[in-house]
Image 1 (cartoon, rainbow, N blue to C red):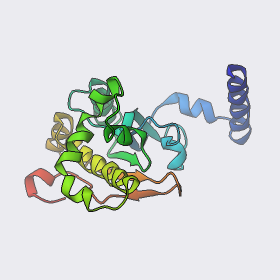
Image 2: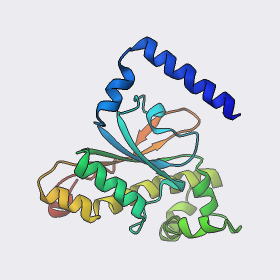
Image 3: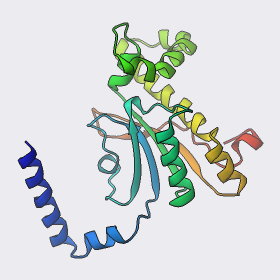
Image 4: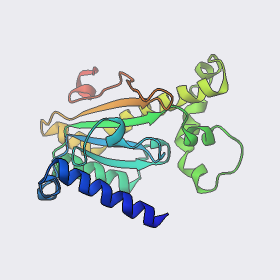
Length: 204
């Protein structure tokens, strides 16, 4: 399988060079992405592919169920680098329907370390218990929970000192919440964008 992967890489590299002779030289010179994408580790949700972007156009961080933990140093380091070094002004938090992490968070079965990681989703389940019980079907409830996880995550990102400092400097950084449909390949805007002035003005 590794040999096959390496062959695919060579074929892809040759094809890109044939299409644009200076493609890799251009990419190696500098990294100037327009978007910082925080998404799920699910192999079916690769950021640049579903967004129709080329390598170099999106800076990516992924974890199980795209959970935003205030103590996740890996995420915070990537966020800080994106905002303060790469000067990215569009942050996207993207969840997806049919998320295995969200499903695991709603199950009683033990999942090892994942149970600790997914605790914020369990808290959301309790906080929105009444709303979720009004949704018909387990799959539909989990998909709604995936949306709530993104909406909550957008707020958590906005509350980080990284974003607070950027906004205090007058930088127009915006955080958007999207959800991806595995069944139709579409990205949907959850209309929960937070940008500069949100906390001070009480509006988005």
